[in-house]
Amino acid sequence: MLNALRLRHFRCYQALNWQIPAEGALILGENARGKTSLLEAICFALTLHSPRASKMDKLVTHGENNFGISLSTDEGPRRLVWEQRKLGMQVNGAPRKDYNEYLADAPPVVWLGNGDISLVTGGADERRHYLDFLGAQWHPTYRAALREYRKALKSRNLLLRNPRRNRATLLSYAVLLSRHGEIITALRRQLISLLQPHICDYHARISSGREEVQLYYRPSTDKPLLIALEEAIEADERAGFTTVGPHRDDFSLLIADKAAADFASEGQQRTLATALVMAQAGLLQVETGQAPALLIDDIFGELDPARRKALLSLLPPDTQVFITTTHLDWLGGNTPPLPVIHINDIAGR
Image (cartoon, rainbow, N blue to C red; front, top):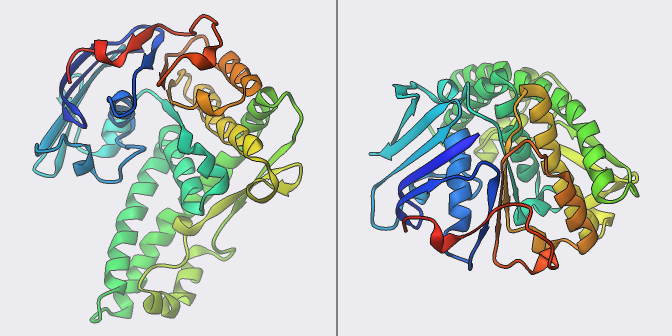
């Protein structure tokens, strides 16, 4: 359980100290007032990942050069300080030397947002990000392999753009990529298999069981990765980047045997996207034995009343849920499912 959040120089918050309700909260307020930033800070403290920014300097309050996050949990406090372009990490007051060590015992978390429809309608990078966000929390080997793969991929791509590159070095990076990439691909296939029943279950409950969903993993190559990289070396040199590997993989989403991106209505696509994210929660609870915190960023206004009611009924009773919203009209006069807290009443700006 999350108990308290303190921020310094994070997004729009010069300082913040929030005692978190045990149930979570329905955070009410106008746009651009910092509601989403609260959820982002929680997500970053638990995953070292922001769903809104790829670089840490984007998280810093304008005009500052550092930020700090402290998140108190039942397992102990977690503290992050980013300054001089380095991230300091502590758990229970003790330093953690690297990302893997910091994340090894982090409570799980799931993010639902308006942009989740891009999991269905967007490019392959959106779906890879979905798998990596989940996989890094699900399996420590996935997390370690992904980090090493990304480091090797960055180095190889830099080398491919260097006119003085040599083939021997490129091939040495190919060995590293294949070593970690094969692990990622195998675990992603396992992850898809584990996700399938969760997605089908949530989708059926949100859509009243009207449509069947299928997922299929689509690797960028069917060959062993080292062979594929060796064969693609000339194409990679022309392109200036690595053209095969897990960073180019995808998975297909079908509703009633038809591609959801092409044939589903917007309502069906939103339902499927919501089921995909709720499936993360279901899988993480089963695999880790912990109910993940649910961070739901302003999505209820985008759902029709039936799907909204269905989603509310799916919120697990044994987990903390955080919902941001600009109004309560979508409740239709019903009692809010969580304590309502106005963003202006949370201490600190």
